Amino acid sequence: MSEPIDLLLQRNSAPRLTLPGPDTQEQKLMFQAALRAPDHLWLRPWRFLVVEGERREALGRVMLDCLLRRDPEADETVRAKALNAPLRAPLLIVVLADITEHPKVPAVEQRLSAGCAAHAILLAAEALGYSGVWRTGNPAYDPEVVAALGGSRDEEITAFLYIGTREGTAKTLPAMSTDDFVARW
Image 1: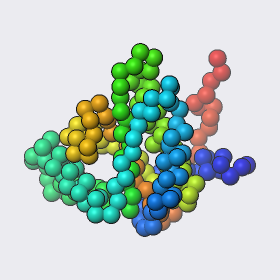
Image 2: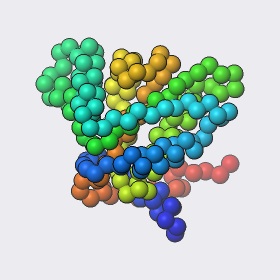
Image 3: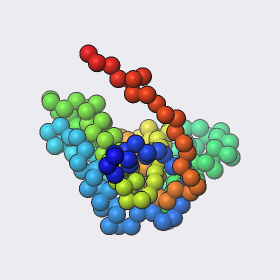
């Protein structure tokens, strides 16, 4: 098999990530891959925020503040998880979908395009020798998190992509038969 197919067939999420993370030039390549996502009428319904270094701590404070607004009674374990979530990887990329009214491109297509861009970033990271995991959770659906990140009312968080070097070995994924998911019509 070819190297690109091997990469696609072996990719899996890496929940434990450490240094090093992609440098600026490698990040640029990852974003160039994202810009190739399917995009009906070239709306470019996505943008990307890079969060690294000390800014990860600031994002953790945003996540904690928004958690406490949603659930003032959250216990200490849940609070610590929110505060420390952005520290799970040396690089976070927030993928935002910028949803606009369009007569030919419904909102769902714009969201799917942003999802394809996020996946392209993860695949590019793998191709560069890094690993990643796509997370969402309550912060992704909280308009106050979007606002704290400088997003507009028309933007939604599609993904928090955590990227770095895999810590430990990759988990073994169960083999699946395409016959269970594919039918001929």
